[in-house]
Length: 137
Image 1: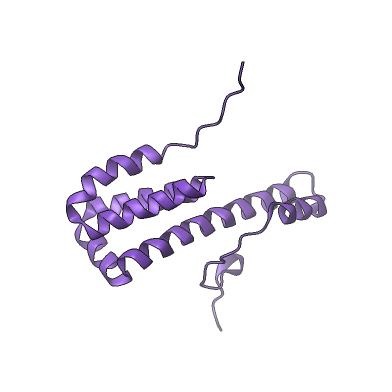
Image 2: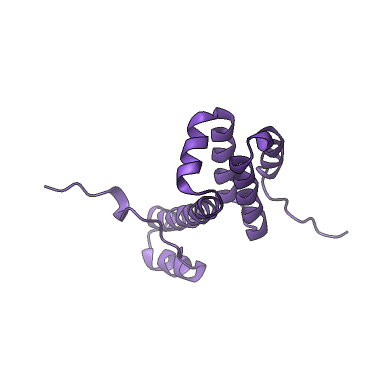
């Protein structure tokens, strides 16, 4: 008997999350007043966030190398926390430039031990939710 991962997990991140049009079409087709429609929206939102986190992780690994990243995260708890905050913030942002900046900041901290505290301040500032533009009065 083989164990399957929940929700169809294949062990690899999808590089292309569902398009909004696909999400809305599936929601319409679900035809369940709340349950099925909400589930579609939640699943697709999670898929988009996972894709952004995965892309950021890939960029960090490309800059630092996987072995160096593992080594540095294992030896420095502050860097480990910085990495977690950076990936989480990248997953939540709607701005590609902000996501890429977070990846570069984490990479810089991995490559230069002296930059961890300084970089942590930037990542914590960028971790805040994206500002919503206000209407001009």
